[in-house]
Amino acid sequence: MKRLTLERPSDGAIVKLRKNLFLIKSVALSHCRTVVLNLTWIIFIISGCSSTFLVSKDGKGYFFGSKSDAIYRMLCDSGDLRKILKDATKIKEDTKDAIYQANCVNRSGEKVKEIYAAMTPEERKDLRNAFKLNGYDINHMPC
Amino acid sequence: MRYRSVIGMVCIGMMLLISPRLVASSEVGKTAPVFELKDLDGKKVSLSDFKGKVILLNFWATWCAPCKAEMPSLENLYRSFREKGLVVIGISVDNSEKTVQSFVKEKAITFPILLDKGKEVSFDDYGVIGLPVTFLIDQKGIIVEKVFGEKRWDSEEVKMKIKRLLEGR
Image (tube, rainbow over all chains, first blue to last red; front, side, top):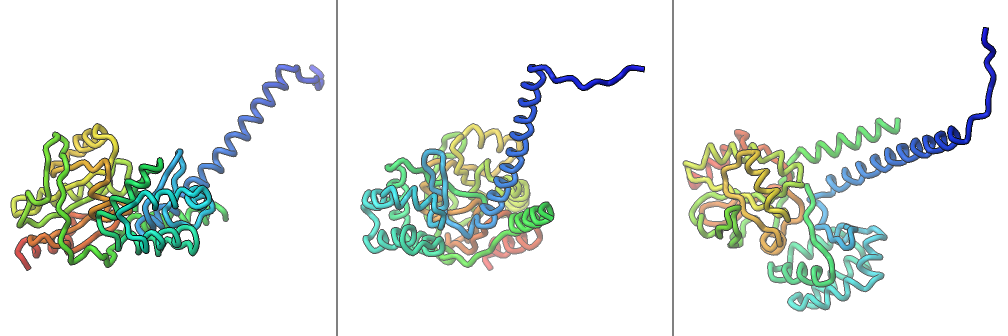
């Protein structure tokens, strides 16, 4: 009968084991990421039509008027929204103020939606072009 | 437990996705903005070309799952009523014309598809936010209904509504 002995694994085996552990960790992380992405997608779907349009720059996109810190940094902290509104010459000053307030001061997606709905086609066109001029894209989202 | 709550959220999401939202909108009761866009053959098409007809104006994109899901029923509705005077126009906001073309071919869509890559019509003229959005326009050019989200367009309820509009009621 053979006797079983415990031997120290070779260096190659240890490296292989470490690689496998790293792979397991990566798979687990990607699963978490998938769940988070799915949840974000569901939130997008739920808020879809009741929300506003999506503004994106450098691969990052957020709902215009949303209360997230990320869009605040992107539009308000950076001064981009001020520049965009300055470039939108066909929008009335009080509408511009209302857009800025609703995005950077008393942040409200509902208010943004109201302002957008009340804007004329010319004003919407001007806003879209001003976003474009400042490196932003405007996109629709699925309802 | 965690999985149950995730499944629950998925179900809520699906329910909201499936149910079309009929929201009282500021556009309803107003004249439909006239536009001119190119179709898939590069031919210019204007809304005014269909003056006096009942029009179903559907804003969509190939990346929008609910938009793609309602397309077959929209095509069915069009086939049922085109001889009676219903016009269905699909306005795609896709960036790639080729993607639209292959989708239209694959799904055998016969109603006119126009391209609004720059979103001049969807964003500027019609104030579209989410997709799909469909505007029902009567023979006088007035928007009588704005439908948010996916809808079964070949249902009896829709057919009755279209029939009434075609009869001028």
